[in-house]
Image (cartoon, rainbow, N blue to C red; front, side, top):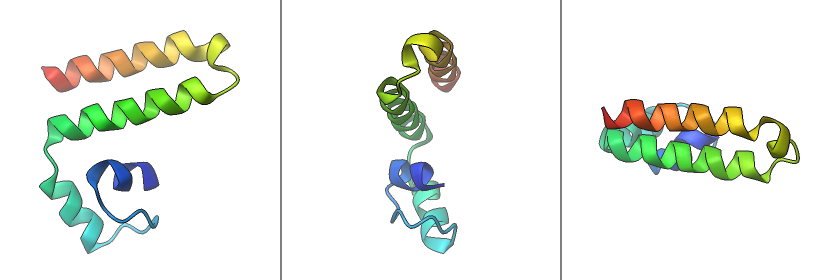
Length: 70
């Protein structure tokens, strides 16, 4: 929830209310997908287990970006 709020430009408070809905409606879907996946990639690369699981995580992010660009 808080990742979505941050990516959409809403107040990051963990509450899904009218302000979050308005921010989600206002953000360009393509930009949302790019920001969301950038945030995920930054998070995953910060994990100690990235060397073990990173290839799979990065592949899923790449797939999401490809779908978003379609």
